[in-house]
Length: 400
Image (tube, rainbow, N blue to C red; front, side, top):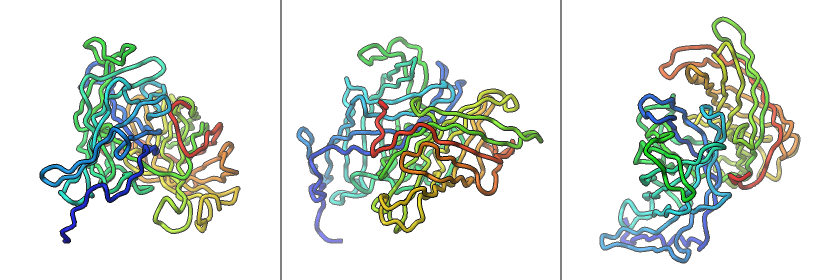
């Protein structure tokens, strides 16, 4: 190794905020009893703003032991935060930074004199909102991860774990590089007053330390589609064929979110990559015990392509164009959550970038649906999902 000691000044970072898309998950326990409450892992996504050195008010320093670091802050604004759909609440939730408390942190060298890998750390104070709740927590949630670049973008179509666990936990979490998670959990959330201060001693829910322990990763898509969905799934269940009609409204963080990555956003050569980042569509099935929800897996990425694979940019995609996704689905029921043992291939033709009217259907083999411990409960044999009203753009603010 050379004797040159790096500091973050060599990165020549611009004195402006980082404003990327974020994919996240939280495992939530509902009610006032952490040990007996119903768990749900909720997929979330949105838009964040990270202020950082060399912006005014943020420091860069090298300590007496040779470790370089610079300061960061996760800011609060009406359009900034993450949102998702909760089966248990049957409602949209969103998690925002508390504007009355500092969400500050740093990027710090792990090895003195070497910029990467680096420690990424944020002291997180959040508020959680639904249509009927506004909650805050008392203690800080320490968010920690190891990153290999700034901005620490996750490689497209790669997952948050070193492996593919099944279930909503509890289980030990082994996060991947460029993925951060809450390390001071469980944390109780209480009703909030107008100053975002927790009120009383009886919590409404908890963030749990697994399976999605307040996890998040930054991604850099070329385009983001948020679209309402309606459609039907077919199941083989208890020796019968069962059809379930489903729907999800993107205004309630239901439906689907599709990310498109042009060749300038990945390292796989020409072609546009696609990711089905979130799915939440709800229906009713007497055979399955009542209200059910089809969702996309958080640990297992639903990846695919748009176009012919020869495009040198997203703007070169000719429409109508084929959208292919290897979808990793999970089915939430009143009794238990069922997990597909393998991806199912769904595809359709995107008429244009608006996406409205596109139908995605299962094309190929079906898949078994199993419990967390692998017990077979049935098979997912058919999927048809039609995109309805859509919002398409380079950012996905939470206030849409």
